[in-house]
Amino acid sequence: MLETSKVIEEWIEENKNRKCKTIDRGIKEVDPSNIIAISHPYEYPEILSDYKMQKLKKIIKTADDWDMSFQHALSLCLLKFPNGNMVVDGQGNHRAVLAKELKVPKIKVTLSEVVYED
Image (tube, rainbow, N blue to C red; front, side):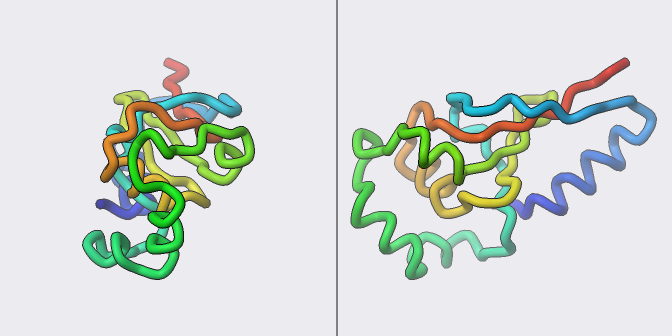
């Protein structure tokens, strides 16, 4: 999985001649398969077995166990780009990775979205 800061830097460079803004969308349901980056430079295979992930996997064993509560959504923050790709923007790296691994169809997150103004 990519690192959020690098994805953002690349996106800014590619769109330097476009006028954009970020909109807070609040709590939304999203498809985690569109998450392409996490906000901490974890090595992808290693994050699947670190201590935080082990704790999470004890609670969430299958996609059916996923917690869609408001409380969970507040601590899983994503930034969505105009092409539909999303990156973890703050908290929630482990849950984002696990949701992708378990192929959870929808998760609740706190979402900000980059939109073009031109």
